[in-house]
Every structure is written in C-alpha cells, then in structure tokens.
Image (cartoon, rainbow, N blue to C red; front, side):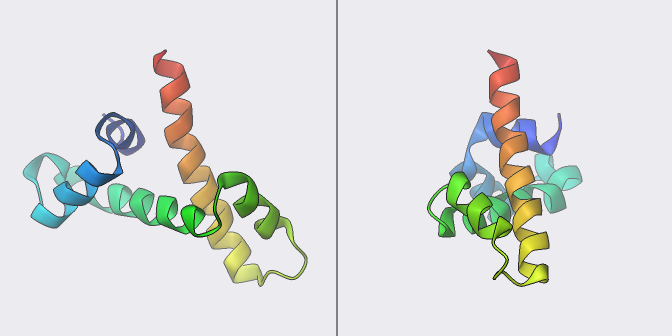
Length: 87
C-alpha cells in the first residue's frame, strides 16, 4: 500500500499516532507519511487548498515558500485522488 492510500484509509489522526508510536506497519512509509502529515498541516494553515494555491501563485510569495507549498498541495491532492479512485 502506498503512503497516500494508507493516509486516506486511516486519516491524519491515526497516522500521527502511528508515527508517534513508531508503529512497525509504517516503517517502510515513515518518511512519506511524515511528509503527508506536514503537507496537510501546511495547507491547513492557509485555510483551504484553494487559498494555498492562491498564495503559491502570488508574485509576492518567496520562491522557497512557493516550492514547498506546491509540494504540499500536490501531496494533499494525491490523498484526495485516492479517495475518488476508490469510489
């Protein structure tokens, strides 16, 4: 199972708990799951994925912030795509 599929199936709170407990089932996905949690939290700081995209596209946003935010948006969208594919 891919990290984004696991994230979607379990939810952010369960993934946080798995990471905190260093759960053996997530050993192979630990870094990916950690990145997904951080990405969801970063996008949430902007209120929504739409607002995060607007901020990332602003000419006033620092390039290093744009790069990280675009990666975070892609991570969040990958978890959403898993949801639509499974229905």
